[in-house]
Amino acid sequence: MPAAPSPETDRVMIVDDHEIVRRGIAEIIDRADGLDVVAEAGSRAEALRRAQLVRPDVILVDLQLPDGTGIELMHELRELVPETLPIVLTSFDDDKALAEALEAGARAYLLKTVHGAEISDVVRAVASGRVLLDERTVTRRRADHDDPTAELTNAERKVLDLIGDGLSNREIGERLGVAEKTVKNHITSLLAKMGLQRRTQVAAWVAGQRASGWRRG
Image (cartoon, rainbow, N blue to C red; front, side):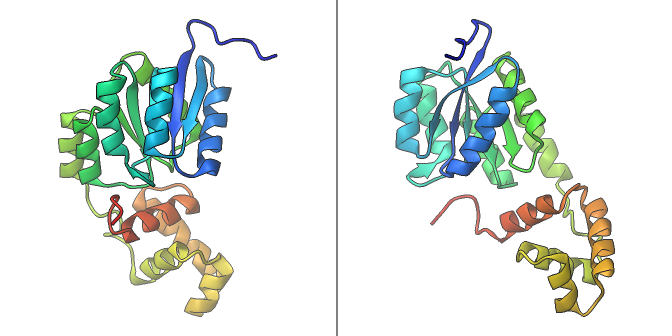
């Protein structure tokens, strides 16, 4: 049988309606020293029930849930399980959502494009009492939130859109009538200009921009 968590272990709950995403995050957190995933939930209602049962130290919350929003859930948790500290983990790089998360009591706001180690570090920081999301963060981000595609060439913008469509480098080259090597050069350039490191981050950014907003309906 697995050893019981030590008294120093921070108990974590994950709320996301995609099981694969939940399992991936759970594996990252369970591998980290001092962290233990004690519950998962795929909906707002399920999260409310389980959080009251296990009373986690930290809860990772997606913004979009099938029966509501992560913002609504955090407001409810603040009343029902006030000792649980919420962290938003989402695909939406959205200023309005960031501000609403702050109002709902979120201690941090993470995008799903972050490295696994960063998730664990932020969970530990929040569990120790740190607040990584505050009014100054929101205000500074709004002031500094320039369009990351502003410096892209027309060709790079086309490649960006096609990455968002899920096309491979070869397919993009065929669509644009250029060599695959040229496509790779465009991607290297646009990654540098947008401050990103991986192609998957580009796809996630495009998906977020194409969404009508983080709220469904």
